[in-house]
Image (tube, rainbow, N blue to C red):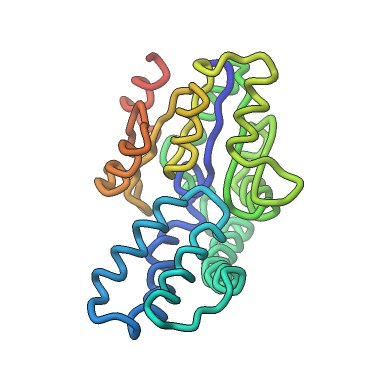
Length: 247
């Protein structure tokens, strides 16, 4: 390894744990009255939500708007739906942030188990680490600082016009002279896995069952395997992470 890229939510941080059911619940408030079978509609929504996990939330809201329109509904704009789901997620996030800042919540409880030890091991090797997320840039920078992991990263990239996408970051790393097969990515979404494999890197799928993050989430595992992950792990505890780091 010469460089390592991490996704954030569900890969390291757990501020937004459970965001997918929350997003699907919001979508079903609109989809449910439009179709005869809510279970089928939710499954369809889950498919495109999972497909675009790791990208800006707008990428998930656009097919949602199309689905509502196809069912004869009158959808809001993708931007309005994004604002609504982020508002719901933000309420949870603020409660957790306040708990950390007041000292009532240990920040490591809001990290996937073993995250800090892994970051320390990689940093000790002198490997540059990068944090890349589809979540808004300001939020990711704040979250990493609250969790006291921001200092591990050579660069933090979130969703913002002036930031880099995961694809652009991978290209930047390669352009710096690092061979693609020396890049390692950790992520719980299809996007970072697919982009890493397309670039020629090695991809680790983090298929953790949030919030405890102690066992594998089989649905995530299937999604990440389909995206091309080379390894699948439930967290960064031994022995799983030793297999990855010694491969």
